[in-house]
Image (cartoon, rainbow, N blue to C red; front, side, top):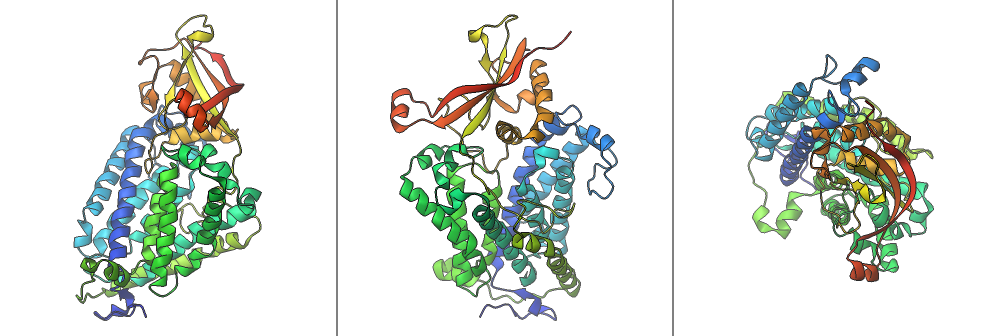
Length: 485
């Protein structure tokens, strides 16, 4: 039986000595993802959402009542205020990564994580489509739960460990259900015939994954169903079963890390799943990780606060449970403005064909076919001879928006016209979001956007041309435009 009823003080029953390694990984790992998120916001938020951004937050605040929406920008937004908040988030996250708050009383990491949660929540709630991803809510919920893990002076609260397992369950089981319910290619095991080629942002190995034998693709999908529909229940089993269930989740998420770029989704899921890993199992595998025998007391006030957080999680679980049981399951749904205890899931449907938006400019007053030059984005496919790169867990928000635009998502058009105008102005903030500006900071005379169908080159085509992609034009998205006098 797991050592959930550990001794130590009047509230010793509240903690466990069997999950110190899990707490170590959860606190530092989640803080590291927050660090990445705040750095990404520093680099991208002003250009995308700032005072002169593509979807300016001040305009949102003027247009939409923010009553009831928790954000520090309710009293006004400035780029300077944004940068101060992000740098504060970076400093807080870095302190947890190196273990400073954990060395103090349990209130210190609690305050640190709640501050990070509040700062990032302020960004997400005004981030519009650029922050409309399920892993934003996942990071917020994980950061909120991490606030109640205590410090090195206290046992690890078992309530919080169970809350993390419930979060891992919702991520995995929700994704499994949405796949089975959503698209026949998951049911007939052919989803990976398409996924590696059409996923939002391929990685450096995605071409190779796509060209694996089809029987192996079918086996991968079948294994995925087992891990997402069966294994999540085992996260709540006694040890060592729970640890092996966590290992299965971590292994499949690592497979996704090396086969694509999904920001911090897979990295964070691996961290959350680690909550089911027991110290006893780890020390049996690696004797140097044997747990300490020190007796640590849980302060009564801290126990009460943790119990309150556990009760809140239990109450808010009504909505995601109802969503999981519904035939009309929603994917990546938040049921409150605090982004707590939401519904998760990814790739309920698989795109069969890849359409990419290619943006070009010309410095010539009357351009011909040979006078157009392509703007190269950092992560999304562009020039056919450029190998995809690894960016995750870093999040390239503009590139993801371009992928959704290629799918015909109407929600993306609001920022695309301003984006083209910024290119005509050679706006430095926007140009810094790109990998290559063909005009080296000078203003083009014209810009345009065309839609291309992309597919991976075959091994024979790759050997002959060195190209990773083959593309053909299918439509115009934005006809040539220039600045009007």
